[in-house]
Amino acid sequence: MLVSGAMNAARPDPSVCRRSGPGRAPHGLYSGTKKGNIMTRTILTCTLTVAALVLATSNLAAQEKDKDGFISLFDGKTLKGWKVEDNADSFSVKDGMIVAHGPTAHLFYEGDVAKHNFKNFDFKADVMTKPGSNSGIYFHTKFQKSGWPSIGYEVQVNQTHGDPKKSSGLYGVKDVFKAPAKDNQWYTQEIIVKGKRIITKVNGKTLVDFTEPEGVTGGRKLSSGTFALQAHDPNSVVYFKNIKVKPLD
Image (cartoon, rainbow, N blue to C red):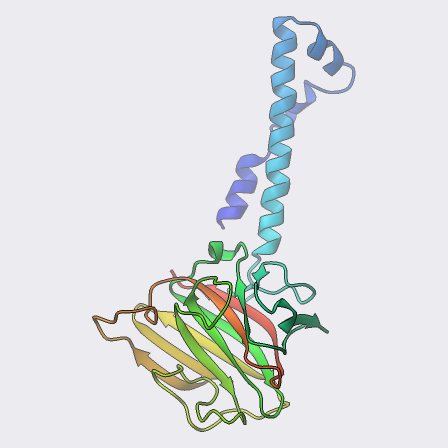
């Protein structure tokens, strides 16, 4: 793993650091001699390498893969790594879930994993809708302060809302018209993008298998980007948890 390699590279030579141990550093720091200058540089080197080791360890923990190679995008406690501008109160965290409930808003992933720029990936999230609720999961999108995202594709989240387009459909492109899940029950939404191919699944069952044709223009096309969760309207309540991704690049 790249981060692990960085940790090894950053590990200081114990014999070097011992030369700046107790009883020696003060003389080296203040004597003004050549030996003192060397000692000062040694102490600085050790300090920087320890800091690099701490940072690498922190990054490793933040991007730790599970047994299937997925990396979590949500810590289950806070919205750290996620960003929303208008109607920010439409998103909250409760009991390990992201709750989307309120005026229209979109919560974008802006965290460290893949520098929030994904091209080929396998994305999973556990989702639960309350009756009459609508939401969506965007991919290959980018942050915008307000309005419906103008970049990327949306995977619909809807079992019984009045919109005839139901969960796991590629909204307005390859729609699903029969709800594949039930309100008040968790289901796993999966989105796989590889090259020009988009696959969506609910609980492991494929609902959409779409290949983007050549020559597509406008904002709704495959490129690369981040993910976003949608708060659709004040009457919709949707829950998300276990949000994770496996980069396939």
